[in-house]
View 1 (cartoon, rainbow, N blue to C red):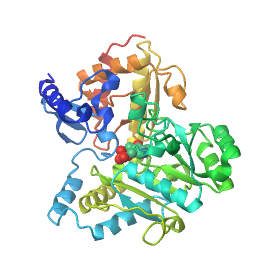
View 2: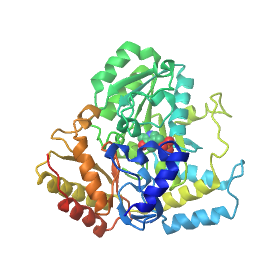
View 3: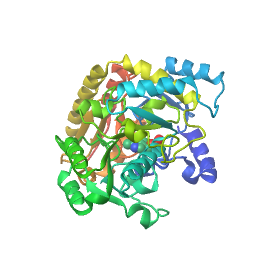
View 4: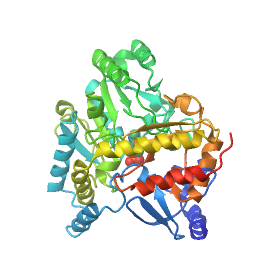
Length: 425
Ligand SMILES: *Cc1c(COP(=O)(O)O)cnc(C)c1O
């Protein structure tokens, strides 16, 4: 059934490390081979073997409108004919900056980059540059891209592969990375008590999506805000997933918390490679060329990516986030019931258009509780769901993504598949 995918994977493994250009795609965490995609449309993707799946990965988040949305596709087509990169400013950079600033309450100025990794790396440099301090607090199981400073106890692919940090990151680089459990304000307060004068910033996923989906407990984000203010550190919200997903204004709008800096990616590029970082104007003006903190990019503000981003945000602004959230909440609740009825321990976390199935009987509030989930059960669930046409993240430490293109029939297909599989504790 996966004959062509298997053949391509064999070739790819000779040419590309692990056969993939980003580790988690190799499906090692679920004891499977990757499927090679031929094309995708809306909520569906079709493999080179001609099998069509309901896609609950959605390129790991960017495709909130679904694949190949007609408005986004035609914006990209039109942009191609105007030239694909100028290395000089263009109008669409201004238009997308305006849309981002208009949407996110804490963003007064924004700089475009090419990935989420670049966004977080640059935001940290800015935070260090303006505070004159080096240390950063990050949360165990949060993922902020693959820049050196963030690869201590990270989530996403790092979690799946159980790499304790990674070789190649000098100890000196992560010495300034301080770790706290997610949702643990006491631990953060202790770090400030010990290192307060050296802490440049806290970086946090305001809703964690890279240890599976983990919600902030009441008071956690406000507590981080207060500690940062008290100690002269900056609060960085990494909204690479949550920006334009938990609502149009991101987690900062949903929870009413004002970070100093915000990082973005995924959705704002509409499926093209984009990231961005923004925040208070007085901080953003410290970036070159108006300030001394250097950051640059040959392809930054790329006209294709800007066109895709503008089209995406224009469509999202008209979209009914509450209706999608209500449908996903119902889906997650029913999925929890269906799986629990099989006698396996299960907790489904959900917010907005995301959910994660954790095969555990504990509430999942941080990486330690996420890791109590039974990995063998997830593998079995993943494989059987895939056999039934449901494409899920090949890792228990990721969030399933639902798009505005998912129909009620797509959601029903997931539940029907879940009913039909066999899981034994
Ligand atoms: C995906 C992600 C990143 C990294 O973005 P890339 O575009 O993969 O470099 C950073 N932070 C969060 C929260 C992410 O989910």
